[in-house]
Image (tube, rainbow, N blue to C red; front, side, top):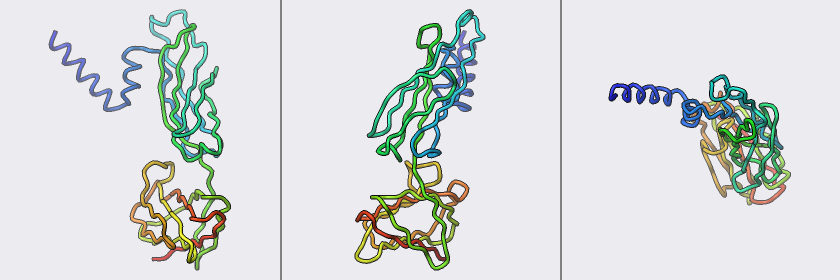
Length: 225
């Protein structure tokens, strides 16, 4: 008996090393949960696209049963929340302007023959970005609103600067592409920001969040080495 328990333990441990705990729980207990739930990271300004795989109902437990629909629930950090249903394996979560650049937690639950039978989750976010090109000698950019998110390419070993023009000040935060939770570097309340890029980012692609102290401020972006 002990030998059987040990074998089961190591089998489960090995599975956990290859997949998430929720996925393993759903598989071991045959819950009928959707598989591989994936929420988009910054692909859209006004929505988070969610996709997943249909559950495997081939076991005896599900004989004669079928998927009725999926229930999708979501919550933006410090923002709106809601729910909806889908008959297929995808759903578009609407994002208000105030929900942009906030992590959205999405859960998809399967309903089989009238009962909620299991769920899986993922995080995503909606983001409105502008492309930032680095020109020789720098370029002046006007921040129309209170802030702007740029998507851009940065090279390790180069210094990237944002000058708010004295006496103006502002804040600049650098993030790896597809990530808005863990900044690579952050500077606050300065008239000029200079960052020596010391990472390769997400294939050298980054988000840069620029927030001037005053709305409508122009900022000069330049680079050097």
